[in-house]
Length: 573
Ligand code: DON
Image 1 (cartoon, helix red, strand yellow):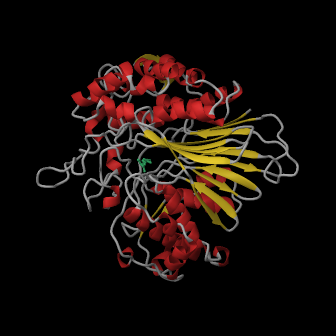
Image 2: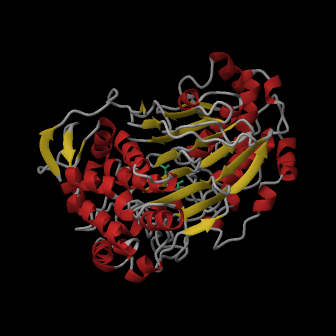
């Protein structure tokens, strides 16, 4: 619902930039002199893709909540103010660290295929992929996980009731927020799709179906009601009762196959994060059904056999690219939902395996991907969101959450205010046929009832004896390479602000080319890499929206930084 009043944006950055924020606020002293990991004092921090979402988290921390309560508040606020990227109709992964006992876990709130899903559901009777079937319309939507994660986080790890932590989001949905340039761009991009859904059009377009002006107040009363149902009843407020009935009716009216039983049966699954080591740093990252952790760890394992500092910059980048090539190949071939397939995780994350991969890397020459056995590939991402939280006690959250593509399916079941994801597109709809990210899937990631599709989302903690980093980004298949580069940069001593703005380069096995952002490679590096046999493509766009928090244990200094490719602003309290 759109009000015609324009209000000024707080802290706007130039149009075309995505809006992101880092909030820092000073908290009480924290001391344990004999523990090198316990600082004298540090500050709490939140880095998220939009100021109002970070402020929602800050409000909850200030009210006595911990990082896990703040994660609920930030996610719910993002569902309201960044609906193109994540929301109640989507899912994601929450990587958690509880400081009191060091307990680490990953909440898998990934969308699930509906019970009536089948391997060939997006193929016609001749076995050909039906255009857009896994992207548009309610048939493309998996059963959402985010609302279940809210209750799980609050009940098991938080200190505050959902009634309190969801309040900022409810307020934003009911009272509205000012449309900002990046979201307006997303609405323009998806206008035709939104027009096909009366409720989505009512929420995000003008009465005559046009794109609203920047500054227009966007109110979402139906979404406020759905959030309120979750605040009052927990996950049941979404997965049962009135909201569930409206969701299922809306999905089925749009050609989807959800049932009330699918919703009632949805559960968050706690999974053990993947843990690795790189030159003395401890890396904690997302486990399957994300491919992120395994691909980052495998890349680091491969690189650990090289003394990267001893090489010139072009050779260093070449070696990182060769590590990416090999890790992405394995991602494509082996990974999927751990509840459905067996994966050689111990092998893929072992140093011995990495040594084998490393032995095929020459320091002076690119290896064509075609020489590596296997198939697969994948390309650029569009939307999704990441946020990082550190509270005064040292609890941390790295969360990457999504509805997959911009506004997901763009379809909003009537009266729910909930935009449905199109995460079913992350499955391989047919062996050899690329998805929206160019992913060519293997059977490991084929569709089955109740299965979770393979993800690239990679929320990660990097810990050294001196400090730690909380990191993650949207960006589809590029997420993994961005998190890898962010990790290497942090370990090289780069600060948070420089890590988020670092120009990226990327290789994903297939297509066999290095994609790079402007500024990522010097002319000399480009020439050197081409001489080694790499095919280079300058990307026309900027990738990612990385949100980083770093904490230096000795000084207690905390930094939070948002990717300047977004519309970020840092606020210090
Ligand atoms: O889970 C995944 O890998 C994708 N659904 C993420 C999509 C994404 O990051 C789009 N981004 N910019």
